[in-house]
Image (tube, rainbow, N blue to C red; front, side, top):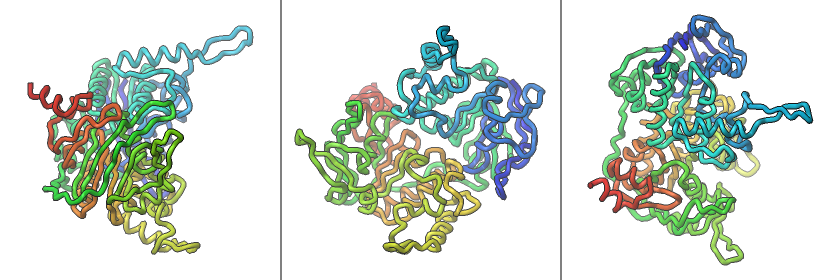
Length: 525
């Protein structure tokens, strides 16, 4: 299916998100769409998928102009979309989510009605999962699945339909390197079968691996279309409008005394499964320890337990003192329970959660309010019953400029920002105060190259100012770029701690379950 966009313009009040965009995607090609956060990529695709209506412009499929009033219209015209932010119902099963909007129905003669054919829905999931190498349980409840597995559900949801145009909006943001490689293979297979694939990503390595054509947006306009092979540094410059350093120079660390210690940390989920199994880690001031691993191996629960968001056995100490309250169960086992997460944060711990929209911001609050969420009752923003909105606004205006948060006003709700700019709000809040410990889970997920450069510099700065930095990331490029030491997690356990700069092959073998010594021996064989 041939896709043409002519003069697409979309405005939100005074903000022009898309400004006269022309784009053509041919059948059988992977067309990459690049741009900074807020450049208008997701808005453009939401217009194409019927989630938004353009103020101006035309959508043409195979020479016929189309107007979509809903995603169902787009789907019926052969357009599928995998969204950056999951469009899933957490309490539904995988099969029920995949079936939404196109439910298989069986007739119940006695009642003269149709009901959802759950067996047929499950069979769809199994068939597509097997065809494309995804391991999905149709009966699993989506809300119980790790983020990376939920992303697979989104992809399968699009692939169950016979699509002529497939839009992938940052689909690899929550995938491991192995899963990413598999998805890129799937994209090539789909293109080879004649599907037009629109691939939105900020990862230049992926663009170089899969793109047939590349269109770059900047501030809502097309600034260039190029053909591979391409120089990634030139692409980054085209995206950002300035020279970008793709790998931060972090220099040599000078670790000091121990600032963060986890001892025997163990988490059991509500189904009785051990998801964090006796983790011992220590991070010194002035160093970055990165936790690497395949998504869903206990990293999320590890960080949540560390912050007191989940009850856990073991101990968590900052500068030798417990950062959370303690209690014991009937069997005498020690559990950690935070009196409040605020108390943990005010002990000098900064926290960047992996799911910014659920755990990092309150969407209905303004940008300014989100920048002082846990500080609103401290000077200069407030004291006791006194709240100083002028100080909150001044702080917000300063942080918006410092962190290049793209918004037309600090009084707008945070939900109005693009995903990457929401992440910048979280980063600005957490990195703008003195920290003893920084815990950063997927800190650059969904960010563009310019923003990643900035965030990496700020993380290194925290290290150099004496903070103990614990990063959890499924991005091996990020782990290798930042880590002074690397702890690899698999099945809830630490398989070993190795120096920064350890080879990808060794890290990959450890992520698959080998200890450090065995992985090094196999890689050398």
